[in-house]
Amino acid sequence: MKRSWIPLLVLMLACASTPSITNDVLETRIGEELEALRSAMPLTSALPSVSAYSSQAPTTGQAYYERNGITLKYVRERERHPEAYRHGALEMARSALNQAETPVLIYRESGVETHFEPAWPEQELEGVGIDALIGIAYVADVQFRGAEFDALVPARSGTAGYLSLWHEPSGQLIVEYRSAREDAVDGMALNAAQLRNEFGVGPIEGWSTHELRGLRVVLSKLTPEERRAISHVSFRRLAKPTGAALATGCTAGCYRMEAADAWIEVYDGAFKSDGHVFIGELDAPYAPSVHVILHEIGHAIAKRELARANRALTRCQQTCGTLVNQFNAKGRRVRPDEVESFQRMSKQLAEIQQLSKGLSVFAQSYVKSSPLNADFATVAGAGRGPTSYGWKSLDESFAEYFSLCRLDPSACQRIAPEVAVYFDSGRHLR
Ligand SMILES: [Zn+2]
Image 1 (cartoon, helix red, strand yellow):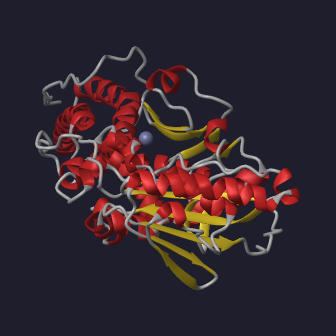
Image 2 (cartoon, helix red, strand yellow):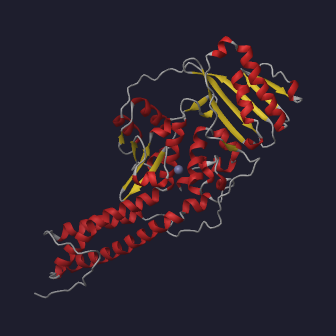
Image 3 (cartoon, protein in one colour):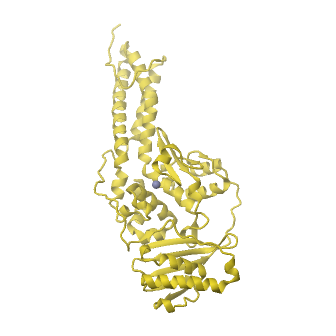
């Protein structure tokens, strides 16, 4: 019998065991691995540089969102001596407005808008509630020019209302108070499996029923395309960060990737300000923990191509070496009727080698400069996050904007209208 020799291809570490396998099965498996790698290849393989981007903290006077907010405390004494309390708060507010030389204060409550003007020491600020006065005393400070603050107004039990304060770049102060509505409590039983099924995400582990409601709010804020982009991500609720998450400085939440795995960790720290701050608009307030989870989802969306490359590379590391060994073993003796099949397999294995090399180069450079970042950096306002946390890096700016634009569209619009368009148009998914 005439023998044909196919050049042996050494792709990866040789594996000791090469179980017997038919040609057809081998060719099918090689084809499957090739397909997996091909589909993982990013649409944009060339990585543009983002060197033009430099993270810059905004100068005073630029619009931003103050995520830390202010804490208003319920004081029982206040109900016994309301006049004394109001007088104290009024004094503080007057002094702050005077010091900041605030040109005008606009106060809105129950559909009524009142304009107040200097001279502040004589202003009675009639109709402005005690909590709003306390808020004004804090937010009027010139260091907060440009900021938006959202706070919960506490009641003896629960929340009396919501307070938003905008210290405009021009110096004017806008304050709006909305009393809390009786929210219909969603009594539906909720479990992790249902949630996973409903939104098509990875496993959800360690969440309480109450926290699952928050996660449900988060997932329902995503578009179907965004949900697809994170369908591989699982959600883990842990007490606190450990290991790499701790070393990276994650305190409230963390997006993590390891080999083929990608997951979001959410810690106790994410829920610590849920009792005194809200995020969003007055008629749709959300807990800050919702913002934390959406922020981490923002990272997952931004890094989806890297996660996909990692998954494909891990898969190939686990199987491609064995396939090469099997091919090499069979290639030592090939019947004439098998030559064509062997040539096809040889070509496919060569492509596998080329693609996995390309993917690992892509994965390595992605960390430093991704096509998504390069594109995002060209959007006006992208480089200076909507919050002080977003000024840290372009990655954090993206995650902060992603979350804020979903939860508080008018804040996003006020800070960076072009970033609002960027997310609304789905450009972050291209
Ligand atoms: Zn982050």
